[in-house]
Amino acid sequence: MTTKSLPNLTPTGTCWCGCAKKVGAGSFFAPGHDKVAEAALLAVEYGSSVAQLLHGHGYGPGHSVSARAVSEGVWRKCPACDYLGAPASIANHTKKAHAAAVGEQAQEAQEAGR
Image (cartoon, rainbow, N blue to C red; front, top):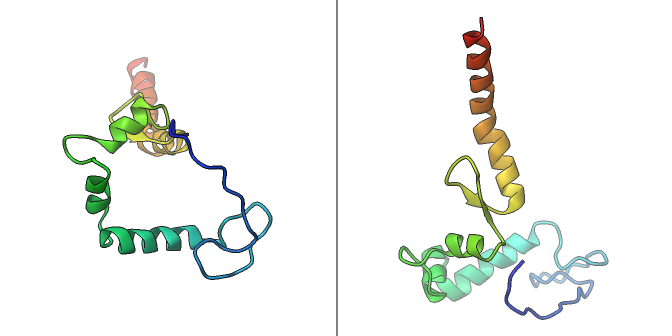
């Protein structure tokens, strides 16, 4: 969650990407259309360049947006490595990237005990 004050938005029953499709109560977008809108905004405002987007908001090699996300508590650092991400991403990363290492350590410990 951001520390910036954001307006309270209300779904209208129509997809916010601009396609005019009807959407269910509580939804802003038809399935997948959030990514369509995101890509269109990136194209229109930043020439489809994430580097331009970051630069436009003051981020880049000397000012990490990822580090800011961690410092503001909206992202976390993996306790076992340098991976940064949302809490759900950290959980998925840990299961995939560190499960093999945990299994190998357990096997090595078991073999050492023989």
